[in-house]
Length: 385
Ligand code: NZQ
Ligand code: ZN
Image (cartoon, rainbow, N blue to C red; front, side, top):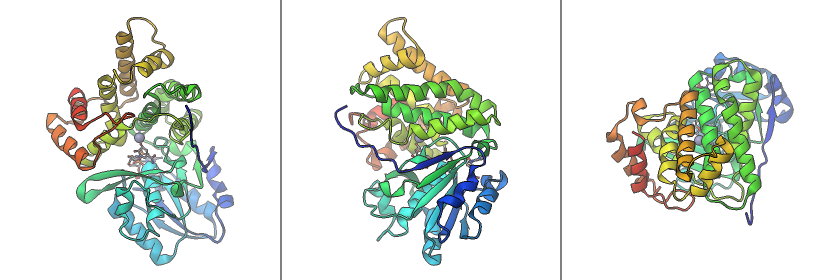
C-alpha cells in the first residue's frame, strides 16, 4: 500500500431507543422531508418514533420508494422539494430508501437532466441537500457511505453514483427496528455485506496487512453471526453487531489504498434490472462462479482467504481454493440465499440479454485489473446455471 485517501464524515448512532436523538442532530429551523418505502416503517413503529422525535419542526413525508429505487419515483420527490422549499432529507428505511434520498439530495439543485448524474457516476455533482438516515435493514452500508444505485424503470438501466456531497450527516441504527424484517431480507443483508468485503479484499496482494486483517475480521464475524441473525428475529445483540459489520463493510475504510474488484456487483445489477432478483440474490449467484473463473488472477488472495477465513490448510493449493469457494457457496445457502440461477427460475435464455445490457452500459472491462470482459461474464453466468 503506497498511498490512500480515506474520508468519512458520517456519524453513527447505534442502539435501541436512540431515534429520539434525532431532535439534537437536526436544526429546529429545518424544513424536513422524511422519505420512506412501501410502508414497513409505518407498520413497525419506526415512523411514529421519527415523527415524535422531530417535534414541532416543519415535516413533510414522501412514501413509495421501491426496492431498487427508480429515477421515475425519485423525480417526484425532487419536484415536491422544489415546490415546497424543503431543505433537509431524512431517509427512513433500507438501502433503497437511503440511496434514493441521496440521489434526490443531489438532483434538487442539479442544472439539467438529473439522469446525467447517473450517466456520469456522480462525478458531475457539485452540491446536495443535507441528509441523514434511520436504518431499518443492515445490508448495503449506504447509511455510512457516499454511494447510491438508481434504476431507470423505462429502460431497465441500473447505475451507481458516488459523491462526497451525499454522505449522510448521521445515521441512527436501532437494532430493535430490524425485528420485523422477513428472514429473506436479513439473509440478503448478510450476503451483501459479505460480498462487499470480498470485492475489496479478494483481489491482488498489495502489501496492505492491516486492510487484510480488517477485512478478514469482518468476514469471520459475518460467518459467526450470520445464521443466528437470520434465525433469531428478536436478538438485539446479534442484530446490533450485524448492523455495525454491514456499515463497516462499505464505509471506505477497508477499501482505502487497495485494489477493488466490483465485477460481481456490476454483473449482478443487470440481473436485478432485467429479472428482478434481489440485489443480494444476484451476488450469491455470481460470486462463487466469478471466483472460480478468476482463480488464476486471484490465486494468492484466494489461498490467503482459504487459510485465514476458513482455516483450510490441508491439501494442494487448488484443493484449498476449491474448498474455500465451496465454503462460500455453502455459507450463502445456509443463511438462506440460493446460489444458482435455476433457483430463481432462470435458465440459459437469460444470458444473452444480460450480457448485451452489460455491454450497452459500458461495463466491458471489470475487475481489479479491468480484465473481465463480457465474454468472461458470459462464462460466469453459464457456470452459475
Ligand atoms: O419498502 P418497505 O416497505 O420499507 O420494505 C422494505 C423492502 O421491501 C423491507 N424492509 C426494510 N426494512 C424493514 C423491511 N421490512 C420489515 N421490517 C423492516 N425493518 O425490505 C425490502 C428491501 O429493502 P431494500 O431497501 O430494497 O433492501 P436493501 O437494504 O438490501 O437495499 C438494496 C438496494 O441497495 C443497493 C442495491 O443495489 C439495491 O438497490 N445497494 C446500495 C449500495 C450503497 N449505497 O452503497 C451498495 C450495495 O452494493 C447495493 O448495490
Ligand atoms: Zn451490495
